[in-house]
Length: 255
Image 1 (spheres, one colour):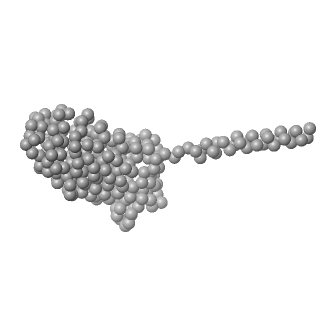
Image 2 (cartoon, helix red, strand yellow):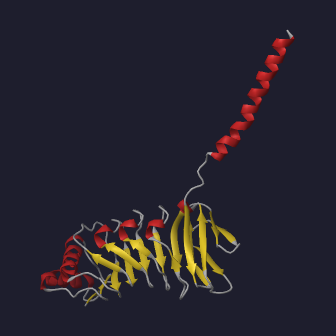
Image 3 (cartoon, one colour):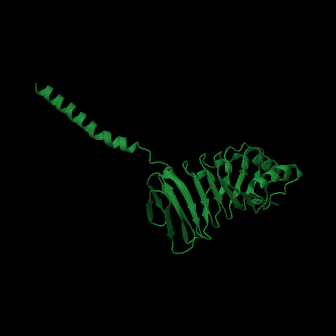
């Protein structure tokens, strides 16, 4: 009888221990979500806006951190000096839908392939050095503005289908365009490379022909294909005339 009671007591203790262990095991198995890192290079102050679908935690890489949650959350950070490179880490970055950096002269550095999958609005002003191909953009991006000393590359044909605004300038090498069915109109469409590359005359012509064939333009829309892009030829003359007429006589600028 004593042996049976002892055995029952041991089984009971083992069972209770397993019940207590389960919550800990389940907590450890939960995914912490995406993490997004970018470098702040020789810059004292960075600032901009975040929009999120949940709380994100931003570790500024200098021992300080802030959390943000909601639409158009204003953010800024002053490192006290512009010495060296700091790595910023955003935890739960899958909740980030808008990334805007607008500090004058600031240099933020990362690859487009590192952007969190949920980003819809990407706006980066300053002296940034963003790199990577347009094909690396999250598929849901609808708003893309990137200026500075960026080296964005790739083909315009790879832009996400829902893009409504596209503005890429700087030392980028966006140098390809074959053809594309434009299902959504980018009311602002500016490709202004300052470095080597740019679209050749055949690519410029085909882009303008496709933009005319697939979309209807209105006053206030803007297309600019300048910088180191080639000038269009007579092959796209009719397309350019149609676009300008739809825009009310202005809004299209080429070399």
